Length: 435
Image 1: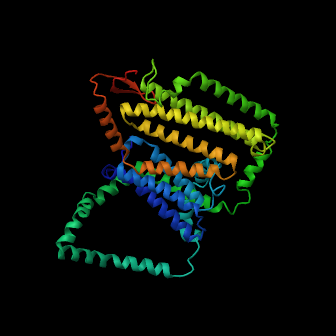
Image 2: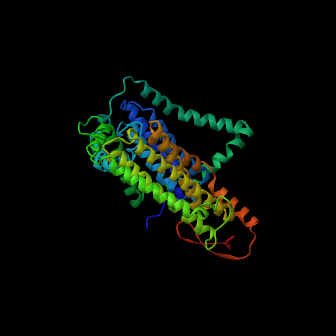
Image 3: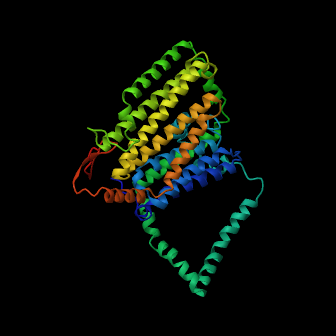
């Protein structure tokens, strides 16, 4: 089994930030050398993946599991596409899944051999020469200044005790790294293979995104939406009847289950339910219904001959469906809050709260876009990314431990039982009595 190098154990929380920081510097420097114009949106995606990686370095946030790792890499690939001009559409909106598929698989692996080609023919032949030699003189000055900086640093440390004390922690931190040990770890056969693989992947992504503009047959936003326009074959009556039936079903469900749905707002747990089961059912009900409603609305918008906003009936039914999403989101949050108030936070409860928030925001934006057209999908993606970044920049591990201690103090029951969390896993917790 491939063991991580010792340096990853020593500063494991900052490895993600270091890797993505190097990725940012390499792509940005290469793009500037190739004189690729920098879109304004590229800074948004750069801030997203860099802030997530910095949050992992500061707090660790083991409670969020692999989600910061996954989403930071998705955002990094999207930033590389946007920065190098390879994104399908700007601003990034409904075609984001297509960009992510191309950025993770299509473009890097179709240009996987480009790194060897560049190394064989010389990197200098693939990059334009700078207009002036000032950059090379600047690099020469930086190299020449390194010995002078080392001498000046040593002199200042010996001359001033306060400065020596301030830099003592830095010296002790650097002392734990042994250069021969680090080289031996990273030059092992298994890690050499992984390093070469990711180097080819990164360079393939940059090379492919850079040359997409030059291709005549590249996928464009207009090409995708023109293909969608050819699918407008369904008359207006078909989606209207389907949406009306869905709205009627939700109305019957709300009226028949009003006590079960609203018990969470009153802080009362229905009989025959544990708090975990009550919250879990509310969350997955909301998730499934929101997925169905938004999918039906998207299908009606793309398949109906009459545009959704041009038909008052379709627009009104769409608003009703999105309002149902908001109601289910509010009910799911009340059930989740009842669960958290009794047993505190866990990673899955934090992520469930995030998902409920995103569903509520997307539903509210959909209602607003039906009333007045604007880039609702663009803002929905941006807000979801920003909220998760703020979540990553918080000390979730400390918050989880704090809320669990408060729950134990508020409900000091000695009995314990097996409680099922959102993923169905068994966790020992305080006895969950039905109220």
